[in-house]
Length: 552
Image 1 (cartoon, rainbow, N blue to C red):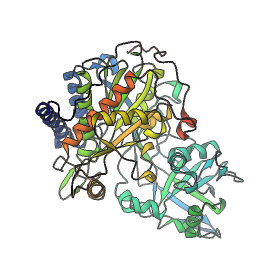
Image 2: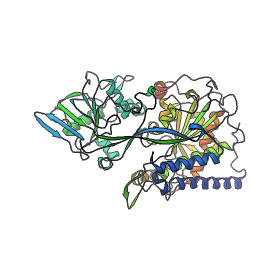
Image 3: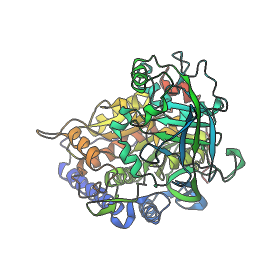
Image 4: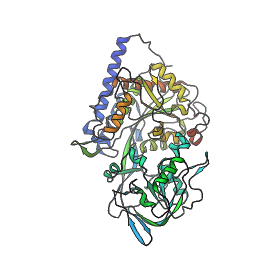
């Protein structure tokens, strides 16, 4: 069992030398992946292809077995690329014999349509509150409303009384659109709140209106129309978003005030109603097929539980080349997520060199198209290189904000499953503290590549940077806040930042130690009794080693 822990004073010089060497490896990987030559690693571009080739070469160097398609490290992920067009885009209210058009970009934006190049729908509109149906609490925004053949107008978010986990699930756009389709809606208008725009101003959204959006592309009849979009919601013939500034116009003449509706949403007393007149939505889109690879490698386990697989993930893609900032148009993505990939590679190195092979097998996946909606992870979960039942846990790394020395790590989502005890034990092994999620309202447990695993019933944990300073004046939270304000998804996220590579080494060791403890445990990880995600997505736990998986 490879769970040996050196005492604090044991072989200090050797350990320091090993740590320095590990820091150098992680830094070299970050600098390479965040180099301008990678052109921001946008999924489906030559920059991302270069980055994927680099990670595949690193997997090969570490001695990991290819686990992608056709005996290689790359797993083909079929995509559709959609870009909205200005000509023909429309949101028009027809009321009291007059037409009231909203201005493209300034007041509304059509959503890219992955199902048709041009679509226009005119229909009555119904306001459906936040579009939430939560039977476990008795909350139903659709009660008494008929959406058949109508356009649904919906606010973002979910009622505060649902609690953070339920709000994360019910407040997601995916869930809202699923419910609208199930009730027969033919279109949707997503209404921004002032809270939404405090987090991301409309002007930023409008400035990026021509950026492409991506969805998974169906390749077999099992997932719907071959060549069509997976989760494209084809039944909705048009979808648009409206700014908070323009939103009051949607409700003019309805007898309801926009600000009063927001207040009712906050109070949990919001009710839906029919809007006067009709509405026209037009959504012209340029659509073409695209592909971008995941990079997948395997470290076989040894023993009766070797058929079980623990999956490491870190997304390789970033947002590519964009609007220049101070003359720089390459959005390098050093923290988001070259650092996460580099930490995963160091974890793989440590595990590949462990004195005893793990009893369960390990998969390492550098995913594509996370920025476009967790698509690479979603495809991997749908098409793993082993039997789906063989995937027992996911350890995800995404944008570890290691910009000031910290004494701790934040294990987001570990409290949902038996992984919590495993993470706590591994942290003691490594000598690092653990802290609670400092911003649970941001629902990070459903906003990165662990979520497709969660939806498949697989317990997961997302390791994030710490919040407790290691010394006087160290302020990890302040450094993280400054990054999010000034450099997140901007060219400033490059390798010149003060990345704490010693903390990155510790994170890699913690990641590896968690995997070793999962691999050695008699039982697979399982959801806690009564957990929200476990109750909704969890699957019966097989006996250890029961799922026999044959790698392709």
